[in-house]
Each structure stands twice: as structure tokens, then as C-alpha cells.
Length: 176
Image 1 (cartoon, rainbow, N blue to C red):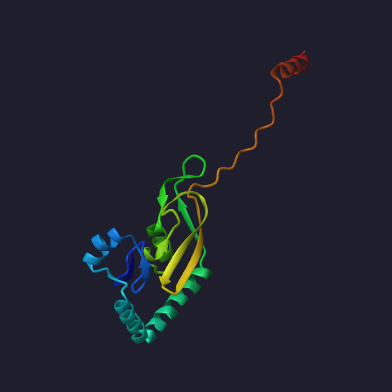
Image 2: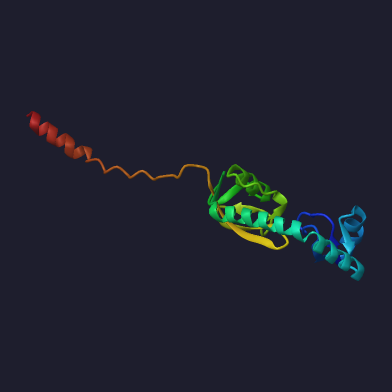
């Protein structure tokens, strides 16, 4: 069922997006809550008029979104977290964690604009998340998840000690 979103809906789309959803989801949740309209020809025409009237404002929003994407391209993100055996995390990393880490670096992005494939990360490594700031502005942001524990450095094994039997014989002959 085609609908037009009236508000941003997390994990679905942004305001004025025309998307396909299951009929039950549209009838039972989106339409009664006022989050969406049916994508009828009349509503599509009204959407086109609204977007035309908002063209100047939309240009400002696109420019602001592109500015944030430029900041993201310059910012490398490394998330340190507790790690158990191997590379498995205690807990998981989600879009809220990424949003929080980016805000520490001075880039404010709401968690609803960040989409991680699979919704959570449960291992260390290099990952990518889709940051969608506007209908026309999307960016695949790469980041690393590493252990917060200091790296374990194996100490070299000490050289084997001389056998005691040989040492005791030498000391006894010198004494005599």
C-alpha cells in the first residue's frame, strides 16, 4: 500500500516520503495516528504543491545536510567498548551509541537518522551505517568498534636456567 508520510517515522522514512508498507501497518497504525496519508492522486498532487512551495526551505535543508555529510567525511569514529572472549562484545552497539559518540566529536545527528544493517553490532571490527539526513542526502559512514582494554603483550620467556647438578659440582671442586 502506497502512503505519504506526514511526519518522520523511525526505521520507515522521513516527512513527505512516498513509500510502500503493508496494508495492516498503514490502516492500524500510520493512518489512525496521523503519521501518513494514502497516496491517492489527489494527495500526490497536494504533496507536489507543498514541495514546490517549500522549495527554498528544502534547498536550505539540503545544504545543511550536505554540510553535516562533509563533517562526517572528515571525522573518523572509533567506538571503544568492553569485549569478551575473541571479538564478541558485552552488549551491543546501536544507532544511539553512534549518535552519542558523534556528538562527543561535535556532530549532532539524531539517532533516528542513523540506520545500521541488522540494527545492532555485536562484534569488533570495521562497520558501516547509513546516515539519512534528508530525502536527497544519504551517506554511508564507516567506523570501527574496538576493545577498551589495553592490548595484551606477551612477555618473552626467560632463558632456561642452568641445571643445578652442574652448578653444584663446579662449586664443590673450587672449594677443595
